[in-house]
Length: 425
Image (cartoon, rainbow, N blue to C red; front, side, top):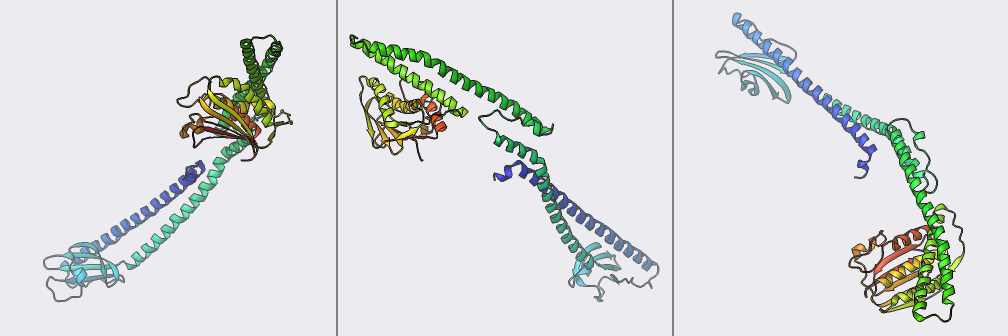
């Protein structure tokens, strides 16, 4: 079904149908014309011969019946016991008829008057045999023309579709990273060339848009690092003072946590831009357990008055070659979401076997919406709390860049399980 919808197959099918229909119409027209001419020629000839003979017989009763190689003539009278004329012909009305006699096909002209019956019979068996041969020949011609139409359609479709196929092949070779190659210069100034020119214009606009987006992300990430460094340094100096009031220290710790998270996000965005450009050279292996514990320490104040337990279980050591900020942002989003949507119970982070698994006892996500968790601005149904729904979209983009995989599923005992795999499937 899918193949028949292709443009090339439509061209081939059109040629095949056109050739078959035209040849079939030609064959049918030939047969119809042949039948018509045969009926008119033979029937009219027999009727005319019979009329002439009857007229001559009225003038001169001694005229004998005509005799031809394939024509037989008979004169009889109503009620005549002479049965020289077969019963099939004798019972016919006046006129010209087709009749089968003794396995042969004949055309009979009959003239019945009150005192005279005249018959003229013409053997058309050879005509019928030739007609059958003609039908077989015409069927063969139709088949030959159909095959030729198919071959012509296949050849024409290749010729017609070659520029489109070449255009599709060149589109497949375009790189997402480099500036797109001009397509229109490889094609003539026809419909395909106009399409290539339109694609060039679109690709150029899209390339500039992507470049502006990358430059904006890089510039913002770079420019934010300096003020965040100042905020972090000033906060550390204030926290070093021994005579701080508890409320002030708590507020400073919140500032420090927010500054750290903001710094990680800007650093991750900067690495993401560099990775997309192929210039990210970070080859240091980082301990996932250490990063997770640091992230959990930052998120612990978010527990507040909730009856929530935050627990880390490290089954074995997992190390990943990736920027520390990227890992922190990825894991931090999963932990932050679990804490935000879990009002009581526990959030368990398990590290081991090349993965990090975050399980919570929250409301979970409807099964029909699990495939939408990575959509921008999606936050789920009946979910309260702050957030723009962009965190998981960023996480997905980071995972794609570094070859990681992430999977969400509802737990049987209630809650959600988010599994981040650094290696394997």
